[in-house]
Length: 107
Image (tube, rainbow, N blue to C red; front, side):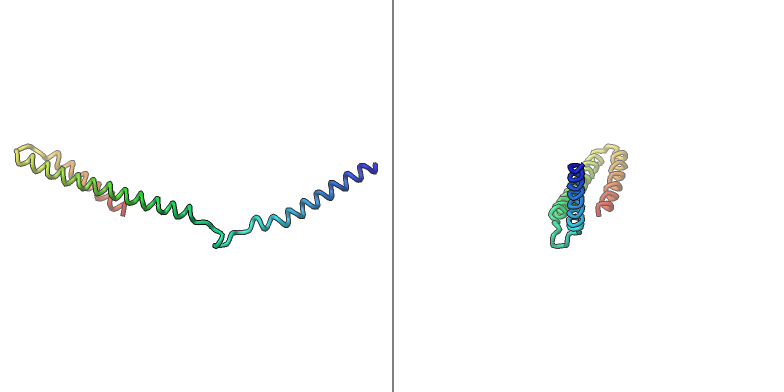
């Protein structure tokens, strides 16, 4: 009986100590970091990556505009030879309209 009493008291003492340590360490672990402690490297990397992708998209739009210019020259050359280019002109006009929409969304 005395041994059971001693074991029970020991377990109770350990539980009380664990509870006190938890109460002491809990708020310190849950505290919000201050601005000096925050690390923004990941955010800066994400922003840099976004800037690179935006630039790459603008480059693709510019390449498409160059393609439109080449297609217009081709259509003019075919018209000079006497070919019917009405279907090409309609397709190119539709493409240019979509390209302007893409540029507006990009901007």
